Image (cartoon, rainbow over all chains, first blue to last red; front, side, top):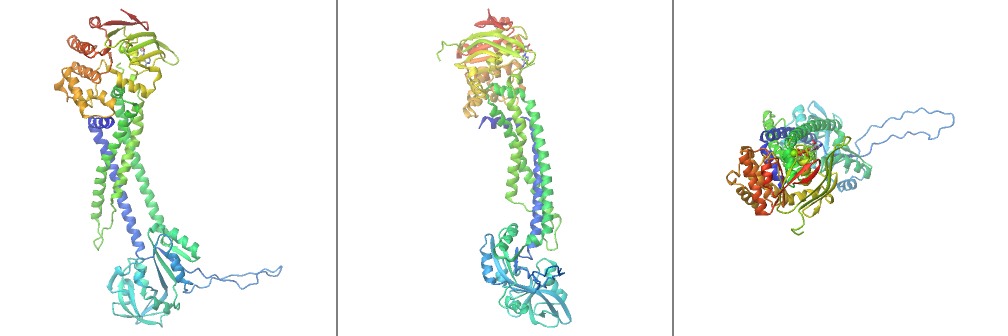
Length: 408
Length: 228
Ligand SMILES: Nc1ncnc2c1ncn2[C@@H]1O[C@H](COP(=O)(O)OP(=O)(O)O)[C@@H](O)[C@H]1O
Ligand SMILES: [Mg+2]
């Protein structure tokens, strides 16, 4: 065993109560960090998963139609033309040459799935009841990696074919629809085609559940008057937080409008970010407290041991080795504290999870505990220990042995 | 280096303390110690004996003058070089034993070996136990220094100074804190080491009786060495 390890272990053993004290301190600090991180990342992952359960990572649409004023571009001198250009009402329009654009988008790095969708407003009527809805046509198999509708069916089956439709759970309630019932879908409340409801879905979003009607692509094309077209390309990416960058890339390369989930949920992201940064602040203060705790205990230990350090130096122990004796003590305290703290924080997080449960039995506060979190925290704790020991260790190494061993 | 060359040689060693008000403690010390020699160093309290020993022990540097130890000129060495020379050539015994309380008696004795090798090895314990047996403490090997008497602690310190077979042992009033019977025992151990192992000892002492039993007595007087 290297001499510095031997001495570090013996010093820690001799100062048992001090050692136990700082290890406890580190353990509590690490426990707080593990617990907080597990809770916050669990909550955030849950929120994001919920958000992404009912929307594609990126939706690509045709560029907005711009109204062009029919005016003489150069009016006669002295003539002032007052004009007000009104935006044209946006119709349901297909993406020009969508197959080509779809292929281009699918080849961008980070994109894992693409699907054409025809989507537009319509009315769903059953008897005298009528609701404004969004009729979306797509191949559900192709859409599944982007929007997992098939896994979210609460009744019936999918995919719908021909004149069949899936309706959101809330809409089904509103219109009194069940599997096998008929509903009329049209651009106004008085006309349209009759569809048979073959399934009811719940995508976990109130608005979507109350408004969406899913039909085969062809049926939607006919309804919205875009035969052979696609009004949207929906995209899934491998890293959800890359969506914004990839959306920008889509716009740059195709000239189409690409909107990422991050843009649509800017509010949520701001919330998540401020939550993350306040958690980071807490962690920084916890780390500072731990560093100061370790450092002050080690400083006291260096002062108490200055005579012994002098003897070690007199016996031919180098400055560098004395330095390492104390750095190692810091590292060991950090490492052992990390193991205790990880166990503490993990147990606390698991316990917290059992405190509150949703109606379906899933935890209200899901926590995210993984090996990476423990490893990262352990590495951090060892590093903190060594950094905290740096000052005391330097002091020990710089001790003048002649002064340290003088006996008066 | 042949045995005829002196183990330790000092030429005109001067030591000043203080920056603004300079106090000269050593005024040009000349001293030679040969291998296996037992030298007693006398002097009034405050005459600079510990200062001189610190310089010889490479724990402090002279303000001027030269020190040769075991073939090296000390002024040529940097801090790492001094540490190495200390580990190779010197053993220390202090008045107040100065054992490390975090270590057991035998671990204390192992430290010079561990300092020299950079690691603690199995055979070091055996060597340390043998050194402890030489001073009659084989049965207290795993005891904490706190549980040993003053005389026992000083014997552990002697074992520690001898274990790595350094050519020179510096002892600063090693018996100053012991009763006369124990002091005699400790002195006898050092005396035996010079005879059996050829170790040289430079021992600071106020005990005239012990000094007379050394090979040579020198006195530090007015910052210079006077031979008796
Ligand atoms: N580090 C120091 N700084 C200033 N003066 C010192 C220092 N060490 C020793 N001295 C002074 O040097 C003189 C000799 O001290 P010392 O070597 O301890 O004497 P001795 O060991 O012979 O009693 C004393 O006057 C002491 O006060
Ligand atoms: Mg003295």
